[in-house]
Amino acid sequence: MALKLDVPNIACEDCATKISDSIHVMEPDAKVDVDVNAKTVTVESAASEETIKQIIVAAGYKIAGY
Image (cartoon, rainbow, N blue to C red; front, side):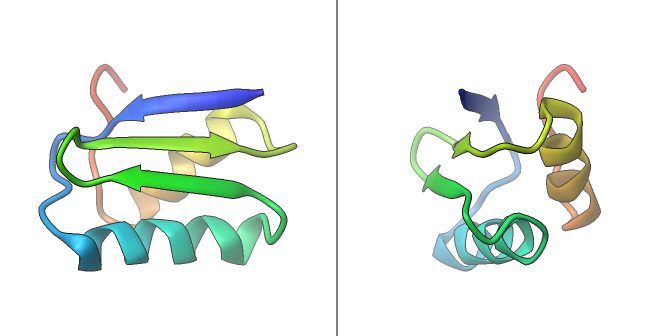
């Protein structure tokens, strides 16, 4: 299941790398696509939606509506 999240405080490629790396630490097999321009994170993973959101928030980013 692909999960697409709006992350309004993504500012640059370093942000994208930090988010991707944080998710991959917890979910090594996850497919992560961070679109800096659209400020979205798309994740395909066996992990729950809540787990992915918590990882992104723990990395220092906000998720719209969360």
